[in-house]
Amino acid sequence: MPRAGLDPAAVVAAGAALADEVGLAQLTMGLLAERVGVRTPSLYKHVGGQEDLHRRIGALALSQAADAVGVAVQGRAGRDALAAAARAFRSFVVEHPGRYAASIGVEPSGPDDPLAVEGRRLLDAFTAVLRGYEIAESDVDHALRTLRSLCHGFATLQSANGFQWSVDVDESFEWLIAFADRGLRAG
Amino acid sequence: MPRAGLDPAAVVAAGAALADEVGLAQLTMGLLAERVGVRTPSLYKHVGGQEDLHRRIGALALSQAADAVGVAVQGRAGRDALAAAARAFRSFVVEHPGRYAASIGVEPSGPDDPLAVEGRRLLDAFTAVLRGYEIAESDVDHALRTLRSLCHGFATLQSANGFQWSVDVDESFEWLIAFADRGLRAG
DNA sequence: GGAGATAGGCTAATTGCGTTAGCTAGAAGC
DNA sequence: GCTTCTAGCTAACGCAATTAGCCTATCTCC
Image (cartoon, rainbow over all chains, first blue to last red; front, top):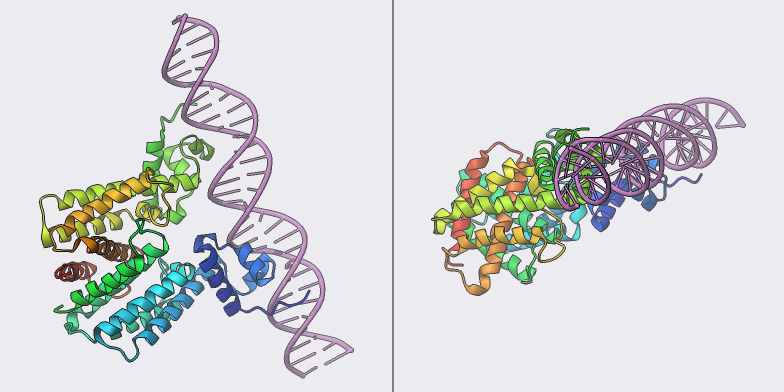
């Protein structure tokens, strides 16, 4: 029996890639095992089970999303930063729908859970956008939730094919950015 | 063997209620059968299977959401209509997270699929809100998608417990309404 | 009111997935 | 070279979805 040389990170990365390809709900332990060249039970040497796998994929997704948005925001401010952050976030979700889905609806087990840590990093990246607008201290949390809702809603609806009709989705997203810019002004 | 007096509508309604209670992913055919007082295979006399059940629950959710938003908007215009629609939608999703989740990520099979029909009714209700703002004909579709994204994003993040920290969620939502009102003006 | 047809219920059996138990061999350290 | 640990394997179990096939309550029509 040749060793496959797996480790948890490799299994999670392969799981995330597979989830993006076939959808999180269709990500089966057997399919993942086949992908990494191993029999199904061997996966349990690296991850605790399907729930643990999903949590780790979710944490990976949040980490990568935080990186993408963080990089996009660097050196920009105001509307430029908003547009860059929103586009980076949407691109990430649309290109990685499976892993992003794994980050939704899972409760961090505590403040040190990678899910919580990476989630905070993603929020920090969006917080940087808000610095370019004049928003009262007490309203920052509300604005952050609103901005996150807007980006999350659009990206998930698009990746779920929730926009039925024919108008161009990219155009709609640019309109959304202008809308958000107006909403954040005089907030 | 006494008859249970079931029909498809009763099964779907019970399934929707159960999905709200335990979560869509935990809605099992066995659990639903137990709830309606029947053995599992008997459910297949009324629905085609789990996928069919989910589609029907999703269509029911969209229909009820369209009713709720439609009623809320009646007799209101402008910001009042926006606030009423948004609150009605969020209340519906938060109170019925399971059935609403069933409406996401399912493709209508055609324009006459109840999913498509009820989905259009829901959009129509939101379209009524936009009539109170001066939005160019060519931008209505973009505004509609944006508004839907905003409401959908907030409601699903909240029902998934995606807002970690402590600030009051209702306050955030009121801020969101004001934000959307600003964004829709001078659009 | 009875005879047949229909439909809604049941049990039994199959399949597929997640998971656990227990074995085995390869790699790493003395 | 021997021991020890670990990553892999096979076998087996349990649970959920589904299908097949039976049986009887209810409905219709004479």
